[in-house]
Each structure stands twice: as C-alpha cells, then as structure tokens.
Image 1 (spheres, rainbow, N blue to C red):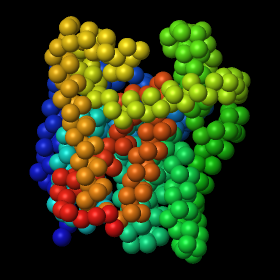
Image 2: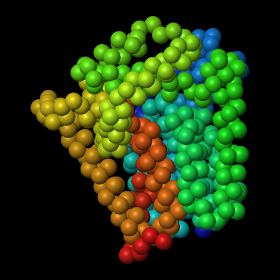
Image 3: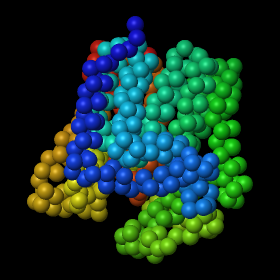
Image 4: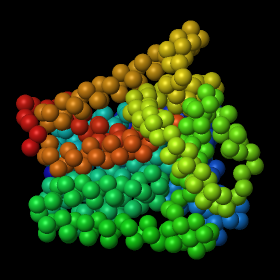
Length: 424
C-alpha cells in the first residue's frame, strides 16, 4: 500500500501559501528576494540564456549552478511565481520526509506523524517562501537520505547509487554538503569493517556516483579561473568571517569592525585573484588562535541547533528591526530589551523555541524506544551532526539548521508513536 499523506500535504500547502500571501501583502517581494537572491539570479540567467555560468562577464565560482538555474527558470514570470514554484518543492519535501520515516521505521503511522510535524516546521515553512537555496538543497538531500536508508536496510547497491547521485545534485545546489561523501565513507568503514566485500562495493559505488562529478566542476573552475576548489565562497568565508571573528575576539572589537578593516564592505575585486592570499592569511590567523576559533565554531553550532528562527518569520512579515540572532555578547540584556520594547516578538520566539525543544525531547525518546536499526540511526545522527558542525562559526544563523530538521522530525515522530522497544 502506497504512502498517501494527503491531509498533512494539504495543511502544508495552506500554511505555505498563507505565508506567501501575507508576505506579499506586507512586504511585497522585498524580503522574499533579500539577501543572496541576486547573487544566484545573475549567473543563473546567463547560464539559461547564454549557456555561460558567469557574473559581470567573469566565470562564476562563488555559486554552483544548481539553484541559480532553478531560480532563473522559475523567475521568468517574476519572483512571486518563483516563490510559488519553491513552495511546490517544499510540499515534495513533506512527502519525502514521510517516505524517509517509513523507510527508517517501516511504519505508516510514524510516516504520517513525521509528515504532520514537517508540514508545520517553522524553518521549512519560512524558507520555502524565501528565494534562497535551502529548499531545493533539502529536496535532493531527502532523496539521498531515503535511498541511503534503503541501502542500509536492504543492502541495495542500486539504492546507494541513486543516493549518491542525489547527494551530488544537492552539493551542486549548496556546497555546504561537499565533505558529506567523505563523512559517509568514514561511516561505511565503521559499519562494514568486518564485511570486506560490502565495504569495497559500498565505497566503490558511493565514490563513483559523487566524486567524478565534483571533480569535473573543480576542473572547470581551474581551467576558467585558475581556482581549483569547488566553490570560492568557502575561502571567502574563512577570511571574512572565521579569521575576522578571531581577530575581533582578540582585539575586543566587533565582527563588523574587523570585516571592514579587511575590506569586506569596500569595492571587492572581482574574480579569484586574491583567494590564495586570503586563504593563507586566514589559516595563519586560525592556527595562531585555535582555542578562539574552536570556541566560536562550537558556539555557532549551538546557535544553529537552538535558535528559534522566529525573527526570520517576523522580518518576512515586515518587522524591520527584528534581530538576526538570539545569542549576542550579552543575551540576557538583549532579551530584556526585547521584552520591554517588543513583548509580542518575545512571545513568538518562546513559542518557536518550545516547538524546537519538544522535537529534541521526542527525538531522544524515538532513539531509545523507536526500534531503529543501529546503522540507520548512525546515518541519521552522522548527517545531522555534520551539518551542525560545518554550519558553526560567527556566520551561523538559524536557517542553516534546515538540513538537520528531517532527521530530527523523523526521530521525533517515532518518539511520539513509540512503544516500549529498544534500538535494534
């Protein structure tokens, strides 16, 4: 019997379309297209119309072509309709979360519960409307996760191959997943260490379906620009965020002050001419102060894991001065000021945080009582921890948590439906 979570899908559609309509009524397309949208749109249109992935006439290496191409194609009739197309992807994500839960627990009940939870998951709802790469990335990640779970459960190399290809597609949408294949290789070594044949086959299939495609893009970057990495955004972030954050902590200044001193807000030179020097300088700064860097990474990961993301919703609906982060240099003072000036916003933050903490609590119960197979649990936890780890640092924001939410929701659904069973 096929999985048909029609009721949660309908609820998810109503919630997302309602937010889309309210955002357009209150802020037009200004917030929907704010942030990095333009940096995706220009190279995407050049690729769609002229067959060249370029920005300002130069080969684009900050962005990878997945989301720019999607955005260029769906925005031909305007950003509002592009957001509608992205909402459709968000609904597919709800369905895929249900499929993932069913693959993990072989339970229609858990799958339906997971679909209901993800239908109302705040970060997923908000970023199905914002024209950023999160939702498309999540779609491919969910396709990959579901196939990887099937591989672990049924030892299907075909499922592993499809999972690897879907993961490759996800990485071409957001390079944050670039090191995930290597994390999976480490996981397979642990899981199949005593099954040499399965270890060899799983590594061969995973490597064949991921690394050649990533290598081809790096070859393209090297040939066209001299930069041999997959995306130059990582190098820029290392310099303008990680190194700047360490310098700010050392000097007792703000991150913005240090970024300004490094030239982040000036007229930045196009292309990748300074990337090598910036990367070398950044690594030197981080190596000189590893304790500060590690502390900022861990703090950022905790921020990603725990921030409620209520301010993301408030900005979408027109709250101009909503803060970017809950954690600040003095979080108690920041919360006190918000309670005095904007008590309504504090209520929204409390509600979102309560939802998030409840998911964590039920996920813990699902791990203990859900009857999940150990290899599958290892996969879900490894993927979630990977994204929390790579999303840390001073640039961390709540929307980076979106790739973690399907794993959390699936485990929480099992916790809600759990009987007294143990991990298998």
